[in-house]
Length: 330
Image 1 (cartoon, rainbow, N blue to C red):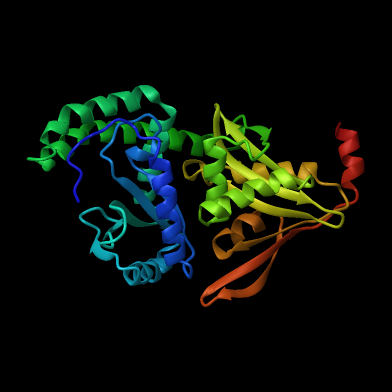
Image 2: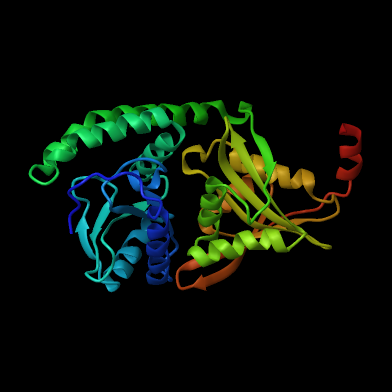
């Protein structure tokens, strides 16, 4: 199947993506990954060819060969990068719904371009409208001259990507001086951005995300905070305040603001909220070890969760003197 038309936004597209994500999560059960909805069908209100674009995102390049093998076992056919460095393309299994699937490394140029472009269109309706109008104008060429359709969009895509990259770079340079607002979320009523971030943190299918959100509704000791910059939700942290420790449950940062201090400020918000006599504990993977260590956490190995994948316990010790210090600061 090759889509040869541009159609108005379809509210079923997120559900179609969720179904694909669940199937991919099962196929990639032995691979550290997350599955992200990208492309025009991931932008509410934007017209698109009715084909879901999916990124399978692995944490490092070392995972690419394992993810490729798992996808091939699921009867995807590896097509190489199709001329775009850092992005591996795959042809669908014949009995799966038609979609575009790409394998990328987290925070690589190919990954950030997908995310930055999507997030820019989500946050800038005027640019999304311009892009939609261009697609409608070029749609007459889809059936007979697909290359003309693709080339006709290229200039505007590059313009929008440049704006998105400049915004990301500006956020990178602004560091901790940015004004971040922390918002207490109240699942199961949560915005799309919060749900997407929980999906990123939970790393599983639709049911796993629902269970994660329900946890914050059912457990009165569990709290969920979101970080908001310029009206955009850019991160979440979830934690449970127990009698002997505070447990980190979920933490996720929108890709285009990573390495800008948002994650550290989320951890600091948990630190400010914890009873001073309690440590903060959590579990993470190898890629986040340096992040936690830089924020004062002690990191110890838990061994391999499954072959080749090591997990780690992180712990920020309790400081009894903080109670008096905070009283003086208040």
